[in-house]
Length: 509
Ligand SMILES: [Zn+2]
Image (cartoon, rainbow, N blue to C red):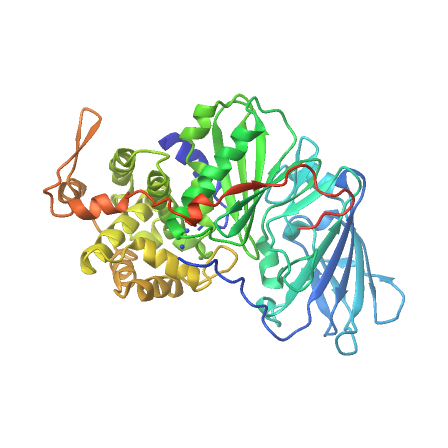
């Protein structure tokens, strides 16, 4: 398990990482103010080339670019004022400066260009920029949508919409949330574009699971897998059920899950990207067995990331710690693993999260151990303290559900204090903020043997024995208590809907 966590750590290095009660959280309301940018993308044969047109609102001269590195694949940029002719715009320093656009909304200007997606995939071979996976081209909109890069305007205040048309046999999928006001389009803010969710063009099998208030779109990328489709979908469904059970509902209204067949067996590295939506990419070995899927924790871990806002990089330990701590608990509550597995996993893992020589606290020690297991230790300590201070009436569950209810999912970027305050507000005790103040800048050592003793958990020859007379025995039992499957329990409402390929030619979210 440690090896696989290490693999996941590599895969997640640049991912927007992250970790909710009652009805699903409403999608954030679009900010008022500037008129939206409207992108229309037409994919050519095999989606090797994209023809892109944008309607951009009136405004001053702007410098436009794509994510750093994909500029060489942008071609023939042209701009037209309202009612005017398209004129070429020359590239300068990896940017295109377009003139001021006169008038007032809804008038605007036209931008047109091509993007050589196939060539970009050959050059990068990376899902973060562009990658060819057996004929499907994986590439986030960050790579191919020209956006304003001037510092003057606040990109979070300006929305954009995206429509994509594809030739017969080619689908387009994206983690961007569907627009609520523009059916058939996707919508986010320009501030989301620098690290937008995973997206893909190509021949793929699309399925939809309704998971506790959220929709999970599964895109099975080209490639053979020995397992049948029902097993693969069951793997995604179990993960969605466990996460919906922990948070009371599925954390986001829409998530794209890209399943990429790869060499070998088992589930390997997986990663999640938010910012305007939610998307997960998970590799699945061709020779995987049903047992590999049953033992896999990665899909649950990634789905937990969708339930927490993006934080800046030095706080990645909280995003990873939450996913590491909550994942086995969520699975145990659904009965997918035993409670003993949760404690065994923590006993093996937590020592790797303790501060070593030279440690400068969680915010300043970005090692693998401190990020994943140091973060998980923070979460365990927080869960125990919330439960102790509230007589076991409140828990980390309530804190995380509160953060989600306040709008803190992976589609947004938050300051850590905002997330911790929302969690503390939900539990009524400021445990998260206080514990963060203690652990962020200083190495805090924890006597894990004493902690497991208080929980009444002992390990004898690989077996887990419980002492129900231990001071925290009741709390320990509550942590892994099975989710009640009674009428309408969200974790039980995952069902398969539809199936088969969507309509050809144009793909709606
Ligand atoms: Zn993670």
